[in-house]
Length: 495
Image 1 (tube, one colour):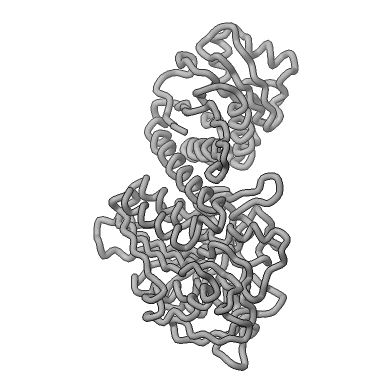
Image 2 (image 1 turned 30 degrees about the vertical axis):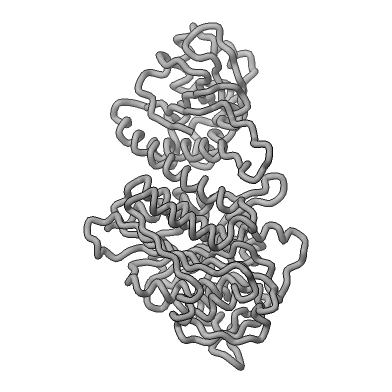
């Protein structure tokens, strides 16, 4: 999808579909009123007929007899004094879905001009572009018959005034860059495990470096990881014919090459059977999504490279496949992590933390200012938050507060859980320094407690995206979260 800021007045632009907002009781928004004047009151007459209520998310498609637009889509935006960020997202989502059902090849959206209670026009423009791009995404890479592409190819966003033009132009670019990052993440997440292997992820990362001069990639083999002492990570791939990979992508955007980077660490379990602690068969196919943390790191780096962000960022992916082969790690086995700490593996299905802990030790060499790991880590996070909210835990409250604030700003929601010392004793082991599970209760917290043992050298936050990275049921597929949150966090960091 191509996006641009409209360079002319809405009434002067010829388009296949013009999207206009309508308030409750059929009251026309300011852009709709301007178009109505050019149409000699045609929209007002439709509103007076009661065919458009203005209820949030309602849509009505018109084919005007005059004017520059072949179609006009009226979108209900609710009460004018109550339109907030969440309601606006619903209106935009309803609008783009309605436009995609038509044969319109291009469209002009005026919804970003609507006054929001809690956001400015730049935010509204970025969100509109993101939502439109996400709605147009289609997966068909592994289908013999490709899905028919939507007719819609380009969207122009109307400018509220000359004063907002610069901010909106930048907002369009931001939204399109985030949209590309989200789509990249979704595409990787949706691929099956027999295609998206650790080697495939590594190849994608290498190609990313080939596309963007600001990114360099290196891939560590199992032999190299063994030399580094990554016994924990390698214990996960032991039962698989697929070799594990540690993928390291460095984005150099800061003016000073030695500027301390922000490091993103992604869990990249390309398929998770549970290993010897085998998962139930029902819905096991969804375990191809267990690499969505890794996918979000690649998606985020794609977005910031598009933006040319003036910051140094390192993306590290711990990629492995967890299989119950003859060489697979067994419950009760003890391994030594790169940090030197020994781990009793009580459950081989708690493998994400085993690959992450070695990656979190490895990133110390970058002397990071901040480390954020992203992982589809625990079923407990799904049980607690469903598919709406990512779990957040951190060893630094200032960092946690910043992420929480930005999650509300971006509508890519997260919520903090405690990382208290009282939970650490649940990981005690009679035979090793630490056990890899902490019992049936507080699973999301004890998983983060495990990771915290390996993050004492820097400020760190953990995002458990097990509930937010993909959707089940009729909408089954990867969501691309938390790319919007991560990009916004990186945008706020000073080089």
